[in-house]
Image (spheres, rainbow, N blue to C red):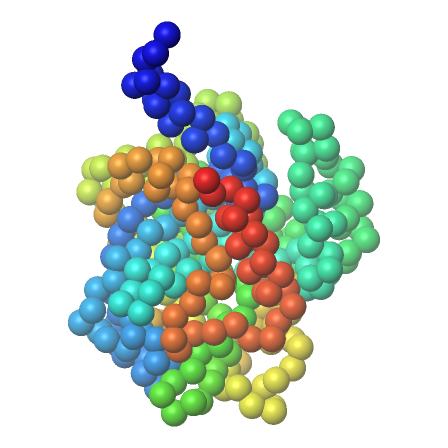
Amino acid sequence: MADFNLFNKIANMNKEMIPERLMHERGVGAYGTFYLYMPFSDYTKAEFLCDRDNFIEVFVRFSRATGRRGSAETLRDVRGMAVKFFTKQGVYDLIGQNMPVYFIKDASKFPELYKALRPNNGTSFDNDAFWTFVANNPESLHLIMWLYSNRGTINSYRFMEAYSVNTYLWENELKESYYVRYKWNPLQGIRDIPANEAEFLAGYDPDALTNDLYSAIENGNYPEYELTVQLVPKGKEADNNELFDATLVWPERACPQIKVGKIVLNRLPSDFHDEVELAYFSPSNTVPGISLPEDDLLMTMCFAHDDSWRNRRR
């Protein structure tokens, strides 16, 4: 047998069998455009946040934090929203989730958290391991309160908020720096569903969130998300550990949300494997004017994302 055309087809099939992501394996993606409301040159020199006339192409990947390939999309979980901006200065990745806080603030606990979230036998969620971790790490209770509200069960990514959780750093041309946190607000409103409806959809339509997003875009009902930021000037009075604590929110009364721009998702990927499955996001992908502060948890996330990509790519 010497059918090399067949051999090449099988080789391409095998190439698609890449290792799973550590987290956020179950996902869906779409392309769109970012529109800036007004220049933010007083706060950052990032070109795409300073030129109001420059529309930026984006790619957005939505995901379930602990959902494996083939799992139901509506089950209770943290949801991810990772946005890739294709700017003139390079690619900028903004990673977020639909909960404003995270499980931990101590980077050394991440491997322990990962084990608590992974299935013990490779198929089912290990409740004992998860709740043992929560009991031993009370700082995670803030996220648990969000997770076990209706925010933990959704039936559409189009009506979901997303938060950066981590703190980043903006710098302008005058070398003035600002700590920043991001938030995405769905312009079509916020909708949650109760647990019994989520469980019904898990059996009736396991791909409910993907089908909803794809159908909306195909029908011209383009999802829109408004980007807002909270800014704190970098200085002795502002440099404290609470600014980087991923288990805490910044009070909006002290740090109001400032509207930056919006994205409109209007195009679906043509190849799921190449464009969604192989999509790589990392907080380390920055552009001039946006950088990472000295935050151990954020640095750990950068290494985890980058090393996972090195392991997954062929």
